[in-house]
Length: 407
Image (tube, helix red, strand yellow):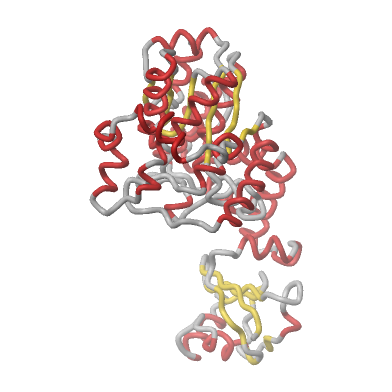
């Protein structure tokens, strides 16, 4: 299949601005850019699919430029729902430096900053050179603006698309950029840039947007959705990422393999066939986790994530580091412990509702401490039990875990 046909097969085409772009994508030779604003100090998995396209386009003979938009980050992109909270300048500058370093490390391409060419533009020049060419009715017709008009939109956010259009024009004129690539939620902003360039230069430039990556319920993998999976392993550990990907819904996992990995179509189709035959083995999910974690953090991090998972499942807490235990138990109930007999500790920590229930669980061998079954209700729970001197892992039954710390 052609390069464009493979992008379609992978589900990476949402819209293109002109049919002429198809031949240009197949032929190679375009200089393009993709951008993000420094609203946080790390990219998340929602960015990953979009930014991976830079590598796909690079391999097809195109030249990528990555923009981290400090200027646009100081204003805020309309969400199409509510006004984005304005961040302090110092925070945006810190986020920019962190993102620039991360993007260069993970994706390896040149990074530019729109603050460099926006900061010296006067308000009068902005209106004369850019605002004059874009009709307000045209701006109001954009979906993300129209939706937000119902709840309120500031003039600053309303002007955001003009600055993004300005970016496209600047990079077109100074760097030969003829294509902007982004997620589907940026279509209105990108086409405003196409309109500005057409009206001021007469040149034709292009847009390509990709569908947003969502879970089975249609929720974005984005920071604003409250379920961000950060690409920075210090914010989302490789183990946490492994567990999330391993638990990907069967209905979505093949889509993720197509969009989020560089496995060939033949490899993905083979995995899909095996997955359909033995879904309980989660072969597709394991392949997804291996490809993404290895790409982001390396093969050793992936192997370590698998090791943590296997040891936690086996209850082998004592051979894990305190950091790994905390990562593995991050999402289980956190309880405060008071030293004393096991039955009393379970009740005080609300692991059991009464001493009678606690004794029943203990007598049935359903309580384990740090991976060891304890059948003595009078067993002394004290700081000496704490793994790494900090935590005690309590398991009730087969799957109910608690991580306790002494007050």
